[in-house]
Length: 274
Image (spheres, one colour):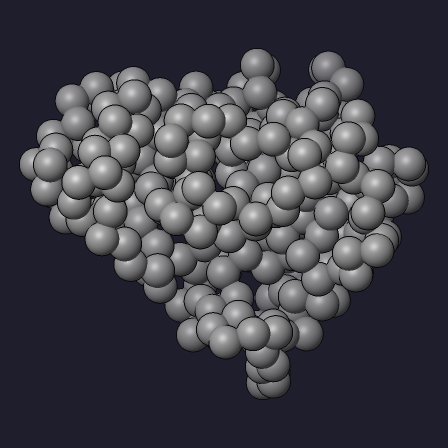
């Protein structure tokens, strides 16, 4: 077992324990606050955040933990660091509040500015996924046994199954689908779970132009999709730089099976200029 796989198993264990925290809150009445308009936060976000940060910091001392609910001063040193963790303790809080089960715990690792490992746990589904770029991606089944997962082989854009945000509509996506004569998209919550659909081959692409969340929404998603044989960039085809100091995904997120990536980048670009 490689050192990176060992780290992935450790991160997976931490995410699964955090998922139990999330489920405990989910099963009982909880209050909702708002960090900004349409940006809810619950005790599940906060408790899972604190747990993950503490556990990662103990297991991997000296590696910055960039976590959504942490004070930015606690991870200020991540820019330019050799490695950094990116944590979304509850990806899909709107879905969590809506009680539709479409939320995830996400832990990603970047080295030298590139996503290399990702863990995504779906608490309500009781399903866990992890991937190491260059080594593979797996779903962890009953009994803790890893089963390899792989992106689809579809290479005709017209036949592509595209998953998009349930809560953030996009005219560019609609234009892209019309230009490629693709079927109506699948709508789903959680960036991480949409990435899981691509990694599993259930969908061929996940598209979110414009503002597409933050780096903690992208890192685990990117690593899992790429580890499963796919591709993940911004919507212009540029790679994410997790060491730049920028935390906002300002130019979208596109995760595909790889075979469709260039065609979708070009279609999105045509829509932006048209």
